[in-house]
Amino acid sequence: MILSRALLRTPIGDMLALDSGEGLCALEFTGPKKRLTRLEARLGQWFSPHEIADRETPTIAGTRAWLDAYFAGATADITPLSLDMRGTAFEQRVWAALRAIAPGETTSYGAIAKALGSAEASRAVGAANGANPIAIIVPCHRVIGSSGSLTGYGGGLDRKIWLLDHERRWRSEPQPSLF
Image 1: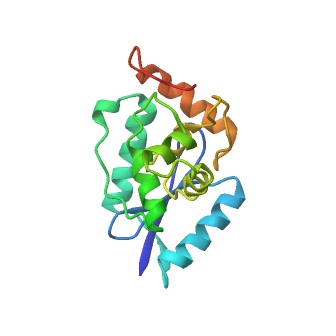
Image 2: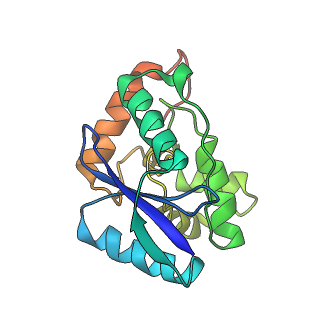
């Protein structure tokens, strides 16, 4: 399998995009380094064997357009992307729940666990959230602590704060939010 790779520039740092040919399979910030190490392990587990080629594809071009619209605040102009997210069945369920969180909204790990019918699984939800290979598009940054505290984010807490602040303008009034 050949994965296509491109570096995408955003207002909050460069991101590495990978296209499996079936869809976007990764979108990670280029730092902190531990995220890229974790990504390499996930690629070895779910896309093995593979080679990586630096090249533009329609999926990468679509991802660039999606990010441009997102950062411009043009949510109506965001076109859905084909995603190739591989993971355990539980991770898949958590990632689907993440995609249901609208821009400007937040939720907690416990709320997601409860919605998935596993109220005691908030730590497992946190682990699946942390394993999310597609930042921003699968909005793991919208998950915060049940007390409203900002918990970790693979791209760095400063980026999480920036993303949540950026999305506040999309929040409809009144809409439940923990942050």
